[in-house]
Image (cartoon, rainbow, N blue to C red; front, side, top):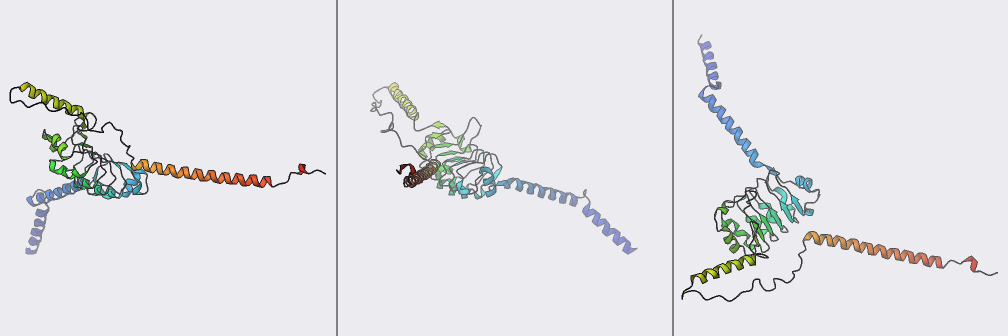
Length: 296
């Protein structure tokens, strides 16, 4: 009897441990559910990683070094993977993804146009190595201060920077400050356009002229003995502004010129060989005797 009672008690204790209604059972169920949710979140955070197979399927190129233009918009990409192997890349669209780290972009020394809008980027340090960068779109990211943009100061060719896109309702935390555009223009003097508005180049001189006129009119309206003397007239544009500039030739155009030159040399070589063959045939025909020329 004692043995039967002991076994019954053990069975009861096992039932109590596995009873979903008991506190221990509820706690175990909640832990399992939390673990499943964490695993799902990790899977979501992992996202898509750029691989050689993905790049070859997107471009049709077998060698990553041959890729010059690449569009990977809205692919759910979270990791740039082997993108740094596309060393000759010039144009890159990565908008509409979940990218946070830009490390592989540091190897893209020929990159001229980069679209990173609608991502989760907060640090731009790798872009400091992209010496050829001319246009950068960062609208819809997590750039929160001008300090994060100081790494771009060494990019002498950077002419266009976008942090805010009103039409698409995209911006960055930095854009909440009203004076960020003026601060950007001072920090990055090579910029000609910020958020799609010209700050240098054609059109900006007229804007500066209007500002100078408004300032002069403001001083004149003040009048009085303490008014500042009028400033000497300044030219609207810098010296040599209207001089024609040499056209820029990208690596794409240079490659096209090179291939065209090779084809042209091959055509000339074929033409030379054809002329030699024709000359040899003419000499062979001229050495034959014409039977009608003999007189009997």
